[in-house]
Length: 424
Ligand SMILES: *[C@@H]1O[C@H](CO)[C@@H](O)[C@H](O)[C@H]1NC(C)=O
Ligand SMILES: *[C@@H]1O[C@H](CO)[C@@H](O)[C@H](O)[C@H]1NC(C)=O
Ligand SMILES: *[C@@H]1O[C@H](CO)[C@@H](O)[C@H](O)[C@H]1NC(C)=O
Ligand SMILES: *[C@@H]1O[C@H](CO)[C@@H](O)[C@H](O)[C@H]1NC(C)=O
Image (cartoon, rainbow, N blue to C red):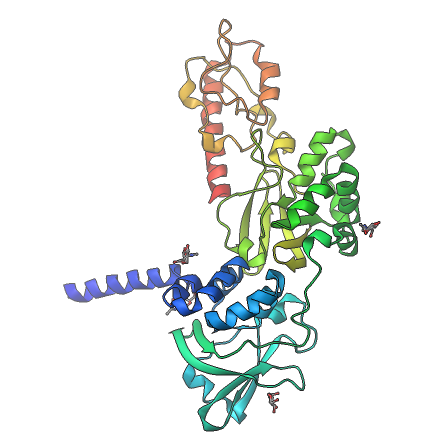
C-alpha cells in the first residue's frame, strides 16, 4: 500500500516535470556536433524559440558541410527563410516517413506562417521513393526532390522529431535577399503598414537616424498604428519637451533582434533604446497562445502584425502608444486618499524595496524628512513621483501620524504585489 502511494507520488512528480520542461532544440542538437552550425543558426535567427514553443514539430537538420556552403553565400535574413522551410509543423519519425499514404504528401512549414510564402511555397513535398529512399523538395510545381532522408537524430514522440537530410530544401525565390537593413527605407515601410504618425514623429525628432544605424546590428520596432495616436488617454505630445519625445519614441524600440518567437519566450523585463542611467524604460511581455502583449507599467498593448522579419531587424505594429512610467507614471489615477502625507520620521524600514520603485505610486518617496534634516535615508529619489511628493512634504508634518503609517504600509504591500505580478 505504501509503495503504491509512493508510486503515485512519483508519477505525479514525473507528470509535473514533463509539463514544465518542453523540448529544447538547442540542447538536443548540442549532443550532435555534426549539426553545430545548423544549431548556431537556429539560435541566431531565433528559430530555436519558435521550435521550442511548438509541439508536433519536425526539424530537418543539415550537417556542417552543407551548412557552410549555404551560409557562405547568403545573409542571415535569407538563412532564416531557408531554415524555416526545414521546420515542419507535423510529426514525422522514420517509421511515418515510410508509411506516407499514396507515397507522397505536402506538409506545412514554419516558412508558410511568416506570410512571405505565396501559394504553396511554404510547403514541403515528402515522397517515398523506390528502394526505401525518402525524397524532400519544395511543393512548388516543377520542383525536384533533390534532398533525401539520411538518418534519424532524435525523437520525443509526438512532440519533436529531428531528422538529417542530405541537402537543403529550397523554394523558388527563397534565396533572393531582402534589402539590407541599412538600405531599407524605414519611413516608407512604416507608412505602408498604417503607421504614418509614428513615421512622421521619428523623422521630425531625428530618431530615425538612431533606428537606421541600429537596424543593421539588431533592432525591433513596435510601431503604434495611426488609430493608436487618436485613442482616448493618449497624452498631448506637444506638451512634452523634445528630449521627452525622443525618449518616448526610443521606448518603442529594442536594440536587439527579437522576432515573435523570441518575444514569446521572454520572461525578464526588456530594455529599450530609451533605457539609460536615469530611467529603466523597460517593457514586460506576456503571452497567451499566439497573442503577445506588452506592458509598460502604465498600460498594456497588443502586438498586432509582423510588418518585417529580416534578421537582424524586425518591425511589429502595436495597438496602443507605449507609455513609459518614467514619463507618464503620475497619470494612472491614484486614489485621492493616496496623496503623500507626513509619516513619523524614524521609519526607513517602510521605504519600498528597490524592486517596487518602478511601480508608479505617489507614496514612493515618503516618508519625508524631519524638519531639520535634508533627505531621508533609504527613500528612493528617482521614483517617478518624487516631485509630487516633494511639493507637499513641507505641509503639516505631525497631525496625521497613524493613518499615514497604515497607508504607507498598505501602499508598500500593494506596490510590491503589483510589481511582483508585473515582473513574474
Ligand atoms: C510533449 O509536450 C507536451 C506539451 O508541452 C507535454 O505536456 C508532454 O510532456 C511532452 N511529452 C514529452 C514526452 O516530453
Ligand atoms: C536550451 O539549452 C541550451 C543549451 O543546453 C541552454 O543554453 C538554454 O538555456 C536552454 N533553453 C531553455 C529555454 O531552457
Ligand atoms: C511531390 O513531388 C513529386 C515529384 O515532383 C510529384 O510527382 C508529386 O506529385 C508531388 N507530391 C504531391 C503530393 O504534390
Ligand atoms: C523614404 O520614403 C519616404 C516616404 O515614403 C520618402 O519621403 C523619402 O524620401 C524616402 N527616403 C529615401 C532615403 O529614399
